[in-house]
Image 1 (cartoon, rainbow, N blue to C red):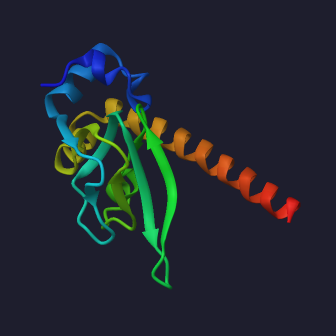
Image 2: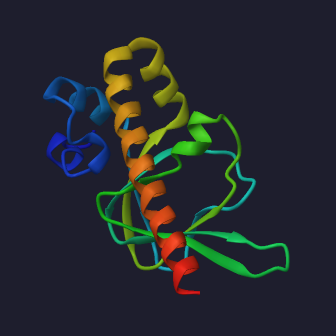
Length: 151
């Protein structure tokens, strides 16, 4: 079982009360990977929602002409894999460790059970997902507009 103080360090779980953190602690799994290892590739089935404890993860895609394009580099406290769970689909990107990385995994099946059986807790998590994704989208839009204007 993962300690709840470790879970509190995660952006996604900062607003969750102690009771909720204890429920998540029971299902979260600790995973460590080495620099250069891939957690998943494009078209892999999703294992769940990933939370970064330490290290850095690169999310990338292969372009139509075969080049790898970095979409984002995520650091400690951030999460990924949420779209594959929410949309119930395979991964559309690859996740690779840029350095030795410690993660927490909330397995897909356990997350789905949480949604069914702990609606209030799941809603808090989904709201935080939506807020974070909205902030990320706004930040990307700002960068895109800045690039257009300076072009």
